[in-house]
Length: 137
Image (tube, rainbow, N blue to C red; front, side):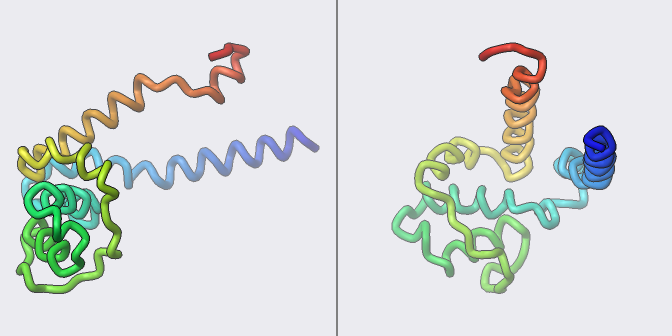
C-alpha cells in the first residue's frame, strides 16, 4: 500500500514538473525575444524599478505614486497610468543588492540576474538529496 502511495506521489510530481516546464522555458527565453521589452507578466521590472528609485531618490523609494511611475517607465507604459502591480516593495537590503544592476538596461539586468540565479542553482548542493544518498554536509 505504501508503494502504491509513493508511486502516485511520484506520478503527480512528474505531472506537475511537466506542467510548469513551459513557464520556466518562457522565463529563460524572455530576455532573448526582441518584441518583449517589459518581460510581459514578469515582476522583475518592479524589483528593478524599486532599486532604481531607492538609488535615485531614497526618500520616495516607498511612495506608491513614484514607484508606479518608475515601473511604468520600465514597462514602456505612460508614467501616469495605473496598473495592478500588487504594491510590493523591495526591502532596503534587497534594493542595495540590486543597485549595481541599475547600471545596466532592464534586459541586461534581467540577463545578469538570470545568469547568477542559474549558476547558484547549478552549484547548489541539495541537503535532501545528500541525506537520501547518505552524505552528511
